Image (cartoon, rainbow, N blue to C red; front, side, top):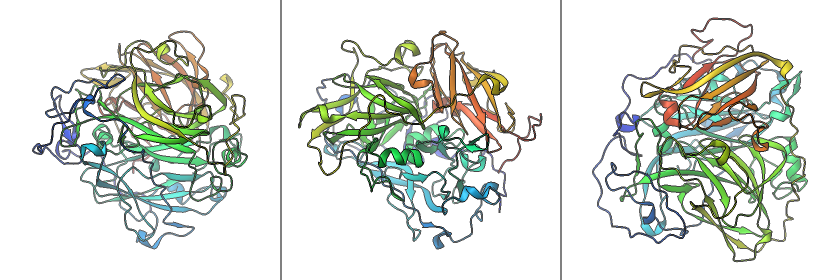
Length: 615
């Protein structure tokens, strides 16, 4: 049965987590303020690099970056989320698919037969509270947070720690029953995939407390002239909360950074052929993706107090900056790596900070993809720019280092102002680093060990073919639109308008392509712009007139706007009718209404209100 109830924002948002007001501060994992817990004083560390410095003057008891020890604990990696059942609805669901308060997408009941190439995998996921050790173990502090917990086949919850990782197979549908065991409404956005509107994580398609929604992920790629468009097959997807007016504090509390790895025949072939890192006969079969050489690095920045609690301020909705870097949940971990090639899927899952990463010895590595998508061929680079929601798919070859050698992943882009890191996008988005950067902040330490000789190294080189790419030609463009992202009346607007969940800002015809000009009208601010439903192609840098750099010239799901940036992007609208959203992914900006709605339709109609449907 379909969703039966229209649900909008509640009149009152629970507790302090809404982040309302300039001085709003959140102790994450707690529904409201609580008394400070006496804690030991932590000495300042003498650092060989630059500390992260932000204004913490309004946050009592906040720890300085120099008080956080480095390289104490080994890095953690998220658990794989196994299906509760395959081919039949799990008994632990307790009801048929769609028989939950928020229903299921209509495509579940009505879709082409070839969408069921493989039997359906059924998953369970819950929003749940948790406690974990995010700060180094020598500090002896634990942190309360909100997170995601997977369900086992018997319906019980797995531990709430790092968000579990999905392993999706192209052509194999996934049905995920998501329950909400927290006191605020949620919306799970599976970012970078191609999903029905009901399951996409629209900001108004919520999961209310104590209720459930069935998210239907068909795992189909769009079709071009009736043929599956494998150029748009995603690889690195992630999930996070998307509830409007609550996304920023929810992400700061821990509801972000979950990974979903999508594998199609082409990518499985690159693994089984030894081109990409993996263990042949293990990493290229399912349902679990067992690959010790293909690992996520989820990076974010936060503020902690001396009791170990996460502290949040929205900075007048300018953007939350932390002064403690975390990788896979942990502050400044260490990772042992063999003398061989590794694939790292780097995700920036923070609220507002923009980073520029390199290896501490300034050596080159290969970048094989951006956001959800693989490149046609690798790019050799010394560094990469990464803002909120950005993914960089990397190959790092540790065989050139000796056993025992230490190398660091470090950020060389300083930022103390929520506006952005300063400077220009063009300067920050280059691929070379000359001299010694004046700012260097190490976030992860690698220690090199001997290679396990049982498993051959990957053969990828800078000239290896990866995923073919077919650009969207001018002849396909049926409409052109312009969207200006700007500050207005202390909030955030697009084309002078604020987000209205009942108004449609663009109505594309399903099955066509459009060219959108996205412009930054807010001087000095940086805005990572994310489009839902499909990847888009940058075709022109209007602000500089220079060619799009290689790493941005194929498919993206997020395009960074620096100060005064203006880009033309092309996007197709295929498979699913709307509504969908596009917005700034500096999530305080998104929460304060820098979000628009587009509603692909067939047949095309002109009515801008209401949208086609609203579950």
